[in-house]
Image (cartoon, rainbow, N blue to C red; front, top):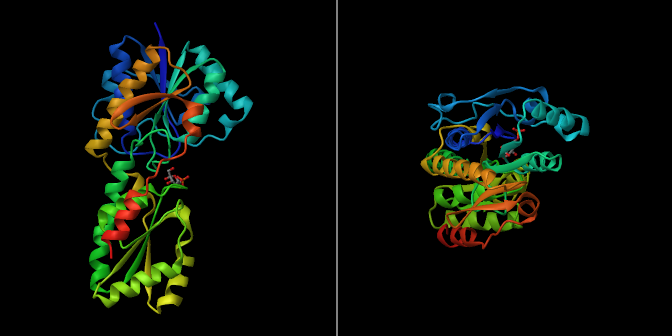
Length: 319
Ligand code: F6P
């Protein structure tokens, strides 16, 4: 009987639990033995695995975080660490591993595959920074979490007639700032993918004040620059005080949205079916609502498509 292991790795993302549940239930459906690995690649090295059954993943589809726990393993990046992980898998006769995480985790999956372990990746990160897939698990929930914060901050910014800089996560990708900013009606959105000048934002603030605007919400993706530096330059330009809110880890938690639960469930089932069909060193993605199976190396080389639509939309609608 084929034995598969599943792990979550890197920064957690809402919907990881739903993905694990789907992998476990699909694996059992196809009569595979399924093992859960604790703390990602770190648990693989230490042999921290346990066999799961249908009940092991009961009552988790709606929960944020990951019940398997997660870690960013430095040891797995060393040849010795990888050897220990492979030895643990061989000792249990496990021939395939399903890795749920982002690009770093996929590199780990690729390394396992080079050592003869069949691997399939499922994209889960709030950053939505993988070019080969339209969406990653956790992104929609994080957008909605940020959106709730923007709505609250807008109230107080209006009352006090202030400019507020809201710094959001996303590493080198601006999607979280862009989507939540567009949905929240932010006046300015700064993302790493698009150059900006403080001058143009200052002009926008002044223009808004002239027509009686009460606030200016500036969404700043963490990869685009320092909030404090931008604040200082803006204040010097406009002569107006502003506030900074750094949303931080609030963005990574919370119950997954319906969209994330569905994406996670669909991708989990697809990963097991791809494994059954013999796919290896492959990642599941979504392209215009169709699930895809792509080679990891090829997937990670693909740059993100941005047709600039949301940026254009914000520019036109937030005047
Ligand atoms: O990749 C997810 C993410 O939340 C990024 O948006 C952020 O830059 C990073 O992880 C934070 O990592 P850590 O949990 O190590 O502080």
